[in-house]
Image 1 (cartoon, rainbow, N blue to C red):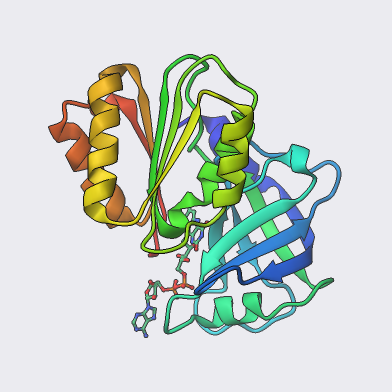
Image 2: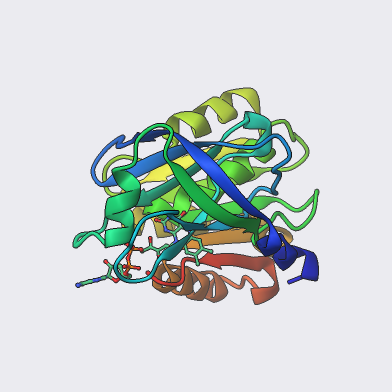
Length: 233
Ligand SMILES: Cc1cc2nc3c(=O)[nH]c(=O)nc-3n(C[C@H](O)[C@H](O)[C@H](O)COP(=O)(O)OP(=O)(O)OC[C@H]3O[C@@H](n4cnc5c(N)ncnc54)[C@H](O)[C@@H]3O)c2cc1C
């Protein structure tokens, strides 16, 4: 981690809600208007609070940013997770024009270089930073870029990943629906790319740890694995 990965926490902004959508199940996607001078790097997250609202329990939540500044908006996504916390109840019931506060974006979950093959592996809502990273690599056709997204039924942002794969022949998303299929898919990628690739894992800490253990068993060194655990889950 570099100092510059965390100094972004000093940035403070108030963002306006453009829309809150519930695309399927308990997934919610929040689109926020951004000030012209707010920038961030793909893979970073912000720490969000709800100004002027009394929230019972922890009054803040970190969320990864799913969009890149070039899109002119900030996208974040979260699941309700029964029993829904008061923070998420209040966040998901906001209307267009309501405001949220953000510290950041900042973070250390970033593409490490411009030549190593990229293998992104994630489950469920862990997909959030991978959308920003994939958008950022949309026009980069110099190395293989793989995404393995596991989710039992629908896959968040699937249409975006399929669009990117139409534009970039080196971008290969795979959508899996079971643990076995997911392991089989990334095992095949680890056998092809071995320690030449960088492996990026995001989502619940337990799942990240399990995936890391599997990759280690396949001979992938810790130095090739980068992760973004959603501490708090
Ligand atoms: C760097 C980073 C990035 C992140 N990015 C994202 C993101 O993009 N999207 C996202 O959704 N999350 C993200 N998170 C996690 C997020 O900040 C929250 O911790 C997470 O969404 C859970 O919040 P919550 O309000 O649902 O649960 P919390 O209230 O924080 O509770 C934590 C856990 O305990 C469980 N729990 C709480 N109360 C009870 C109860 N009474 N009985 C049983 N279980 C209970 C909840 O179901 C939940 O799983 C990120 C975290 C980090 C650190």
